Image 1 (cartoon, one colour):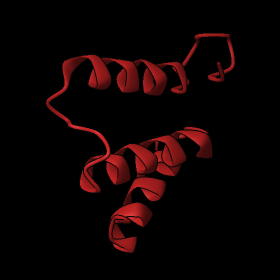
Image 2 (cartoon, one colour):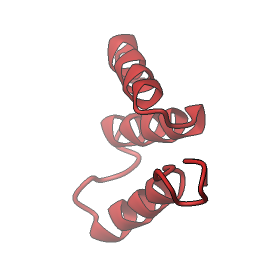
Image 3 (spheres, helix red, strand yellow):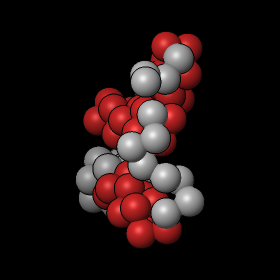
Length: 70
């Protein structure tokens, strides 16, 4: 089950507005879709930790490499 297109667009817009790479929006959308389809359980701590680590790794932090990119 795919998430509502408006939610996917809102994720993309928020990621873009935050100056993050489009890959982060794709990762967030994929996680939302996995949870809503029942493939992943948001209450599974190990799975959530793994997904969060992937998201954190894909997030550019200002000054991290001197240019806002990671």
